[in-house]
Every structure is written in structure tokens, then in C-alpha cells.
Length: 199
Image (cartoon, rainbow, N blue to C red; front, side, top):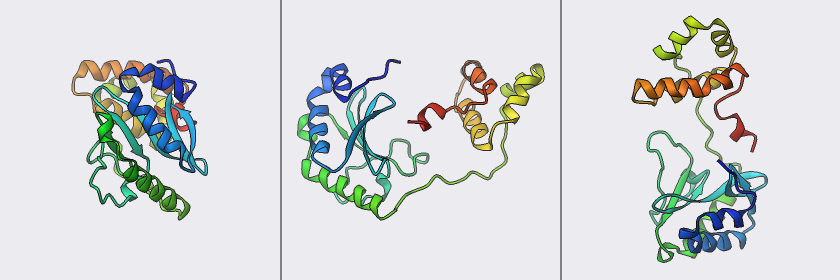
């Protein structure tokens, strides 16, 4: 995947939604947030913390708040992308220019900035349950001691990321394909999401 060096490049790449993206960008640029690009998408920060992002998807443009669950959603516009999984992040969907209400966006942005200033943060909860390694991964451990040793040397958090990545695949073929993909990362003592954490 080619990452976008600038927000303008990102918008040009999504011309079907360029009007919406440009409008949202202009609204955000009028706030105290600092515009940057992380993971190839426009992200807006305050005190070096990621607070807001915008992105074009197949059927809509999303404006998301990294700590959106703390916002008083009095207009009922915030959605949870993955119910039961996503604790803090919330987003607003836009299908056309008529969906954009600047007043609401500014209210929510100002609230998320105030929450950041006040130190209000939803932190991920630590999973203390026993780690259950998938059969497909165990099978590979039996064939490759070095791989097993590398996996065992990872932090518990990294182990859980890999196990969840494999377990969320429904088909065995997909699980095996995912194991093949993560094999070099584990051998290099890297976590599945390390490249994002450094952004």
C-alpha cells in the first residue's frame, strides 16, 4: 500500500469524495488541532495526541474521534465501528455534502480537546485471561522449534494480538494464510501492529 505524504495527496486519491473530504478538512483546520498524516490518512492532533481523523471508505467518508466515547453525543451522530470491540473510538458517517453540519462537528471537536486537556482518556483494558493458542499455530510449533521459541519470547500483549488475528479468521485456509503472513514478524520479535504504534 502506497502511503500518502500529504493530506492533499490523500484527497486527490479519493476524488469521488474530494468535496466532503475538503470540507471536513477546512472545518478541522479552523480549530486548534494540528494536521498530520499517519498510516497514510489525515490525522489531527492536540498536544501530540491523536484526537480526530478523516478517511474515505467504499460507501462513505468517516470523521472519527479517537476518544469519541467520552463525547456527550447529544445529536446521536456517533457510531461505534466495531460494537463490542472498540471501546473509545467513535465516528460520524457522511454520504454527501448535505450530511455535514459544521456546528455539530465543531462542538464535538471542542469537547474532545477539552477532554484531552482534562486528562480524560479511555485506556485499553488489560486482558488477564489465559492465552489459548490456536491449533494451527500449535501445529507449526511442533515442526519449528525456533518459531515456537520466538513466539514464546514475545510480550503477552503481542502474543494476544497474533492469536486474535488468527482466531478471527473463519476458514482454516485463511488461518494458515495469516500464519504465513505473520511468520517473519514473529521471527523478528515484532508485534503485529508495531508499525502503527510508532506513528
